Image (cartoon, rainbow, N blue to C red; front, top):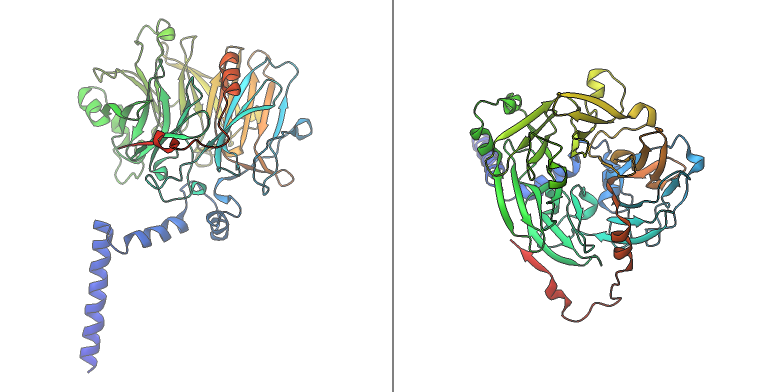
Amino acid sequence: MLITRVAVIYFTSLIFFVWGIAAARYEIFPWNQIYTVYKFVRGDVTETTSLSQKLLNDLDIVPERFMRNYAPTKAARLSVLKMDGIRARRNSPRLWISPTARSSYRLIVGALDFEKAFWGGILLDPSGKVMRRWYMNAEIPTLSNEADILKNLYGVAFFTDGSAAFTMQENSGGIVKIDACSEVTWTKKGLFHHVISPTEDALQFWTFGGKQYDLHPKLLLVDAFSGKTVKEIDMADVEKTNPDIFIFDLHRKINVKNPTHPNDIEPLPSAMAGAYPKFSAGDLLISYHTTNLIFVIDPETLKIKWWYVGAGDRQHDPDWQSDASISIFSNNWRANQRGVEQYSSIVSIDPQTHSHETIVDGGRYDFYSKINGRHQFTKYGSVIVTSSTQGRVFEVDLASGEVIFEFVNSYDWEDGRTLHLSETFVIEEALAKRWAAASCPTVRAPGNESRKQPVQ
């Protein structure tokens, strides 16, 4: 009797063990249920939230997974920004514009916690008044069953007609294109991440396909008006095309879970191409976050034309500049590991001399974003910085070094709690006014659903 009982327990345990292996290997029942619990407990690799905070977030009580901390050093000068349509649970953002700032129109995207959508964008006029808003919702059944409160909007672009394309990393289940009235015009199902980077004519855009932890990412060129893939570049083919260039061997350490982590693709505009004798219009500037690597490839021949390692620590957002330099957002991810102060910076690289210098020193501006982050140099001689994990945007006049604009996405002003921000764009005046003037129907016309065209 005892032997029989032991045998039953043994074989039952064996069956569960084998079934567990099969569930993990082939993603059959109860894999989805187990993985859902695992994802909840683990959270994002960058999160420091407790289980109770995760629960508050996932029940949509307090958005803890995208809560940040930032207390402005000159808090008294920031005033409340009137922004209708936000949820009652959050404070209004705070804003300051210097009297010396040039008249600029700024478009800020992030976790704005609107009543209609957790993620969105606002267009500010030179005085700081909200001219227009966009609601960016990826809670679309054909793409993803997950709530937007669990997704990170990182990868967005706006087009001349006021439409926008965005992805919320792989969790969004695809790319979403909305019109100027925030109505979905098409969706593209699949895994995409980090970037929506328009070509010069804005008819197409580049993005990354697959998972951000893939050894060899795929670069996809997508039609901006239909969502169809126009071109695909497999980075495995780029490596094979350049057998005498060994920059990709940096990721071959055994058991590296995130060997490259590609996070940006920037095509060289023809208007700037003359400043770069080594490159041609349309060449792609690419960033590999894990290995501190940026490099340039010809999208037609797949030849690597240039590379640079070490100007930034897990950098984001390399950009071409009109003075023939390349700028990056250096996150300083490994600051703790290296025993240095936790500040980010904006760095300029000279591709001719292979030298670099810091343009915006985080220590001076109390600036640190361990993950994400964007920057844009303006024609007015300033640089505007999105410090994502401070929930903050600030603009620096490069001649004086003074901050001339600051936006704090405040959730709880008294406690210094903010919400995550994705990106900021400085918009030309004529374009901003055209977007602001565009009218939207208060009631959707019958049959308007036909405009939503899923693209596989």
